[in-house]
Length: 369
Image (cartoon, rainbow, N blue to C red; front, side):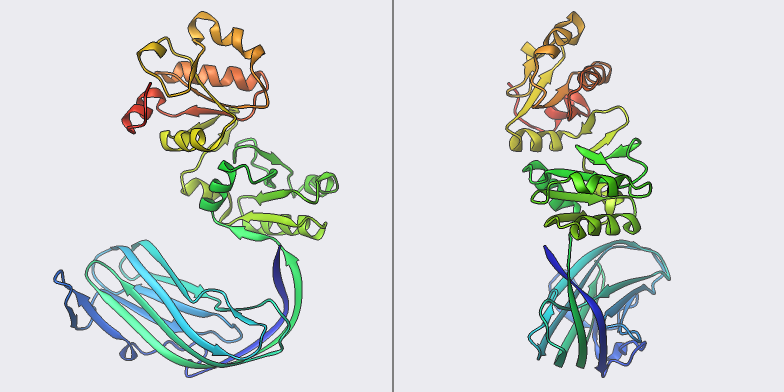
């Protein structure tokens, strides 16, 4: 359970006037050559501005392409050191970094930082902050640095809340079966959703109806397609006394962008060869089914063979354990899709289908029996 702070924060930064960017001359600009020798000169393709805004305790970094071509793979880094009084004034992170895939001519990318949070009661924070932001491309390096004096006043009311986690951590936790329930609070569940998710739409009261039936000592993941639904949805679970609630950071679009498995209206879940390998390595109750007639010529290690063409799969389905998870593949989509659909129609869930079938597994260089 995370502590969220509800209340008023009044802050003042001296030497970083509100709404005013730090002058570029205060930083170091230069280019990096391939001999690893730094040569000081003015970067002519990118600029950075570090500033605050009125009424906000945050710090903002503007990265602008001032060159004549589109820039790609732009790395940014933000660091600070601080000496702050007040036991309740804590740092979120001392160093943050990221990558901008593309920045067109004249385009500005703004990144906001909230360096301070409060987990314990302490009304006043006072001290020095040293800020350092840098941006680099394959051709240029730009850095700006500044010292600031901070005066912060907190009126703190801690509130229990959920924990945001990124898609990579959600996927790892799913492989380790750490979620007791994954809740999709969107109206688009039937179109596509996370594997094994259930749908309690927040907009029609379904989530409110379901909450009293949920176990309070279980782990829950909540997501939607927008923050405006997933944030109140996750908080509703917390307010009902559920202690372990997670929210998918970036929601369903972030999951899709990361390339993780998606369950569609068909019922089964398409997975890549890499994702299939992860499932095999991490899920002890996963059964791999080869529905092809070529099993003897080579197959995924541990797979069982129920050839769909001679009725073997149909005969096996009533005997399969519905408490297990299944991964289906063949040498052609027509057979693996049909095989996966048969399991779904028989009530098995989840059912995974290997995209690209056996050839994708072989092309990835994974073991073959």
